[in-house]
Image (cartoon, rainbow, N blue to C red; front, top):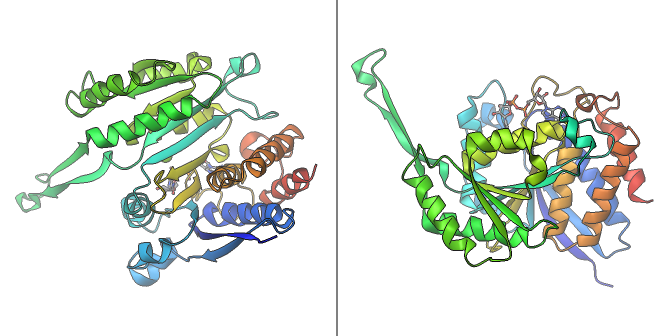
Length: 359
Ligand code: NAI
Ligand code: MG
């Protein structure tokens, strides 16, 4: 049998990113080891992040995208450290990769795990499970704008930050959301905007949503304003299946979703270039968590569940399912880090999870 080798670029970057990527790599290597030669992972680690910035003045090598472009996937930790302004670290590394590789679909499942207490009372009574699909290439994070007129003196500077909405960008993310809805038990797409107040870009979004929806008569739809959707996440989450939203709105809503599921440390995400012209990137939703970094206590599950999304992307569906089952078995056993009420370390959770893979 020939072994299929997937080449993965690991970019742990900063803070707990280092710890959770190490945990995820251990899990993936255990899965490959158990595949009896069916597949293997060839890792290359890149030292980019805040320390690299301190040494070089840039967050990644100048030809970083060139170095990454032939990998099968990127496994990313988290970027950001108090020593570097957040907009420099985010734009210099994570957004540079997302935009440079046209990873226009950001998939962020909201998963309620057994044994994890949700702050939502109704999570004990009803089945909750939805996916936030985030437009990941334009919108409010298009990076268009500027600052000027500082010469007016203190207090006189101006700044413009423009949001970019294109029909192409809206249509492709919506089709992605509808196609995803067709694979789920509940075939429903909820579109989120603030089109009452933002009457150009978001009304274009609404128009495209109506046009695309007409091609999917078998999928239920609703359009909800982002403020109302925040309330709905808390009050009627059982009515959600796929939620599609612009870059900023989906960013905020997915953090809310993961908090409702029990912890930011549990949430996974995939930044996909669905055409596969470039590598896609898999990363936990959380940041570098400087408040707990370096203590070995961060929750590795968000990063490990992101590795499951990577396995799916590689076409290793059975392995992905098995990994998700091992995650559920581990939380059900109560092997949990502090953020979800346990006392286990990052390593203990990872070890228990690897043991559960074999069952
Ligand atoms: P954060 O996600 O790092 O932390 C928020 C809270 O969640 C903290 O209390 C933290 O301890 C907790 N938390 C996060 N991940 C956890 C885990 N795996 N296990 C247990 N608890 C966890 O967000 P924050 O504090 O706003 O940002 C810190 C830095 O991370 C900043 O520099 C920010 O720019 C960056 N950031 C990077 C992201 C990325 O690389 N994708 C996403 C969000 C923030
Ligand atoms: Mg976020």
